[in-house]
Length: 115
Length: 117
Image (cartoon, rainbow over all chains, first blue to last red; front, top):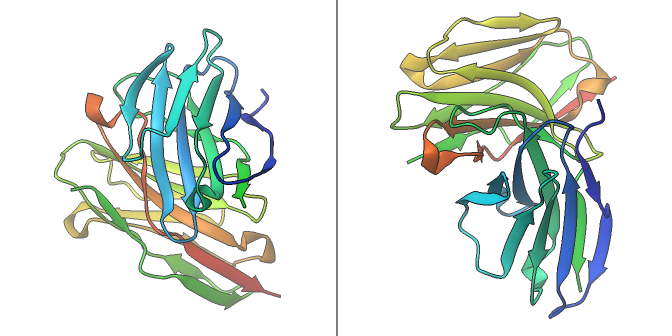
């Protein structure tokens, strides 16, 4: 089975722009979670989607949003980019997405640089 | 409150040495899950192990072993006879059961392991 894929792998944007990142989960996985990784804050949970619905959200401003499509692929969007948004954005998928915590399998990440 | 502490920021060992990575967690829930992930320089987090709070059995997988002790809220990871390929950042993570915690992992700050030849 192919793993989690994320596109693009690298992005350079300027302040004020917006960006959309894409994540394709492992085939058959229905839950997708997003994380932001920075040297200062470490790995932080952004949000989780299941069956096209956001079920959980971390403590991030409204500039961070996401969605999930019927094929479980997910996108996250960051509007009005700030320098502090520079980070590695990781997507993870899990098989069942039920209340019991499944193991999450991660993609290679998208490295976003904001200039 | 949920919290994971990996007190060791960086560890450097020489190949073939054994090394233990510490992980201490905090949670009020009785049902929770603990994980270890490895992050090589490529950036992808690689899943190593998952443990639920009701299973305190230690586990061994090849050169890797894990010691879960609820009494001390610790979930430590030992690599026996380390190899250069073990060099990476290792993360311990916690997830609590329940609808408000769906899909959310709480990560420690990570421990950078350098194995020198």
